[in-house]
Image (cartoon, rainbow, N blue to C red; front, side, top):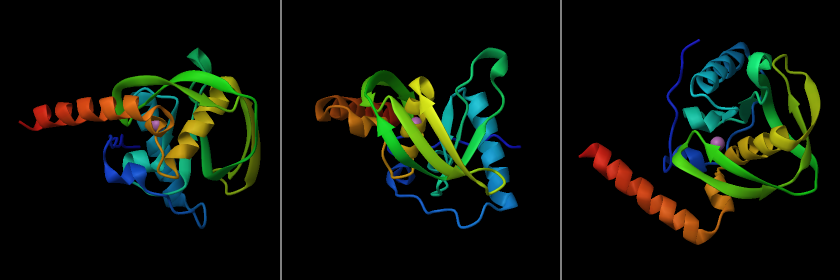
Length: 170
Ligand code: NI
């Protein structure tokens, strides 16, 4: 599967609300497989379809470590149906180069989605996986972790990023 190019802030596709997947077709499973390859190559622990330019409700994640890594979860039309607790975690994003920040989210979530066979599944997650799911699902409604930090921090990052992009195009 080809490695895809990752869209970065402030690409407008990252702030769009994604379309639901109507049916888990072969072509969408292939897209998910390419996204997984792209995620492993980056490397990252999650990737949402808009990050590779597709405004679709699809995320892939793999929060396993070491030898356990390599079995990605494909989630079509994922949604959070339960959440509880609070956890602060230092987040980064493949679409937000050279930046991390503390973000507060739920400590535990239950997500319902369709798997790669189009079957409904329910996942209960805590810790890093719960954080990752919330981060990736945010992408599907056009939200980045930058939207969950203070306006001042966000403005400073934006300024630095735009300067970096200007320099790169000179
Ligand atoms: Ni991200």
